[in-house]
Image 1 (cartoon, one colour):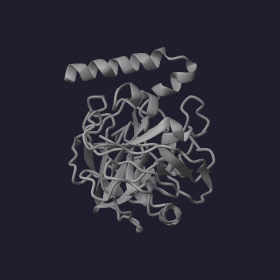
Image 2 (cartoon, rainbow, N blue to C red):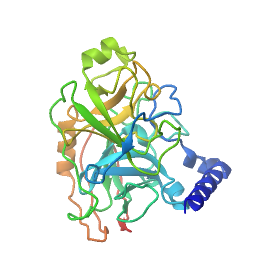
Image 3 (cartoon, rainbow, N blue to C red):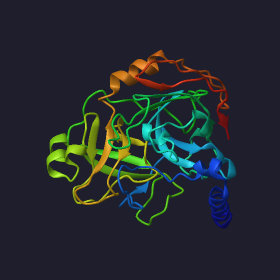
Length: 320
């Protein structure tokens, strides 16, 4: 089984390389960047438990995942409502144009339900009904407003065995609180793991992050720092858009970093509490969606924001 999986991954990479320019966008690297990011590592991470990560979503390139399930993963996300996932805006930037233009929502699918990104058991796969951002174009020079609401084409059934929404924190998390980051991002060995990984990182105060780290003026309103000044542990490429969970509530979204687990360069996250009102306003206005035990159904999301991806999408969640 392992040999077959490696062969299929190799073939997927080969297909991506051989595609014409039009299909070249399939081969975008796992994201979490801003400047020159090294191949990355999650130092001292451990395998995540299902009980603590039922909200975890995998954002995938549709065509890559069509070749072999699991190879399309580019970013993480968090289920915050049966038909809404919260992620990072930069996950949807067109990596070919790289001017901040967002990809068509049809290019991305959302998969949830299994810690192993290559396994289909208990998973649900959704098309994207609507994307909502804070900006019409993403600013790749600052990573400002790195947040995205992803309205799904259907809803997760209330009693799904491995998927459950997570609550949002409305308050700023105090410095020193130890939180958990999860994702399928690169490990210390330099590869993206099959199984979801988790790592503990403490919140760093805004003052300390600006004054004592190497990030300084790069920290903007709506960003929070977490990690170790010694560079022991961190999120990395492939973890983008994923959750920073503090005291069982979603407090941050993996956004960017300079390298991964580098001394004096902690990870930077989108502050959920900073955008709390915007999130609640828009998900409250969205339709709740209808879903069956098989994960099929239709749901819609309507809401306003400073910038949004418009249009309705057809499709249903597929249960495996």
